[in-house]
Amino acid sequence: MKVHPGLICFFFLSLQDGNIGFISAQTYYHTVPEGGQAELECPSSSASSRKFFCTETCKQEDILIDTEEVSAQSGRYSIGPRKGQTSSGDVFVNISNVTKSDSGRYRCGVGRFLSSATYVKTEIIVVDALLNEDRRETHTLYAKNGGNIKVACFFSSLFFTVRRAFLCRGEECFVLTTKTDDDTGQSGRHTIRYVKFNTGASVYVSISQLNRSDSGRYRCGLERSGFLDLDREFKVNVTDESPTESTEQSGTSTTDILLYAGLTGVALVVLFSLALLIFCRRKFWKPKGRGDRDSLNMEIPTYENHPSVSAPEDSIYQSLDTATRDQDQTYSTLRHKTHDAAGTQA
Image 1 (spheres, rainbow, N blue to C red):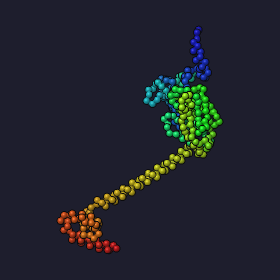
Image 2 (image 1 turned 135 degrees about the vertical axis):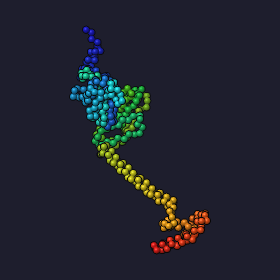
Image 3 (image 1 turned 180 degrees about the horizontal axis):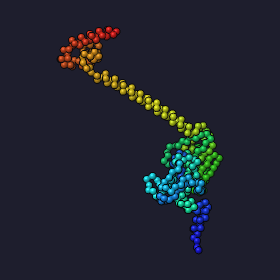
Image 4 (image 1 turned 90 degrees about the vertical axis):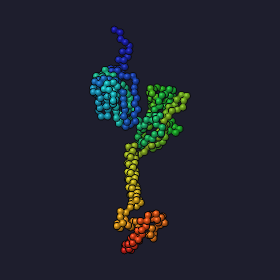
């Protein structure tokens, strides 16, 4: 019996990986900021196929989620088609609220048995910040004294030869000479990893055991043959407080400021409304009758025969008709009464 050499190679490659199932040669990399959501590819499947997600070795105890339903969820893990898609076809795994402990290699499998399933390999890299061409401003990282940071600097469409990856602070640089599509180098507390993808490449830089002297401005990037360097810039601020505590304090302070500003604004609106109301009432209010003492008192200062009336007010009454002028005697009498009342009050 003649056995095809390709089948023999496939068999031994499968044994090396701990499973006899088919494993994709390509590894998918997913860089996710801490606290974000990771969406991972899985092999296509029918609605009733068994679908599972596991850590790298994918033994029974490594399975994180397992279902034969169209979709399922277990804690932060969910598996199934994307929202709005049909019940069969592409399958994805979603991990919500990722942490740095989620960093590592995983597999998503489709098939009834682990030994005969089809797998897609994935690596999740959780970082404190993801810097790409969409981020033009300098990103600032807040870290606690003694803590660690990890930053991903992504560069798309690399149609050139990369010589070295680097992390620089001022004139001091830590350099990694790239030899493969996935290289890692370490110098003391600083680690640089270079990973090339189909769509570009990333430089992952890490600093461990941070102290206050690590605060400052950094650049991470790539040195290219015959081209200018590519880089991304970020700042590090190391404090004695944890980033969470600093954020909470900042949030509380901002809330208080907004509350005070809101109350002040409401008070100003109320005062302005009251002032406007008083002004309008004084300007446009007219007496209802001459028998009303208050109405008469408000009308009296505008009569033409009142001693304290100004010239502009006299001109107003001079333009009245004859019938109004004939009532001068009445106005005079009212004036005397008003003066008597004023004298009584005094």
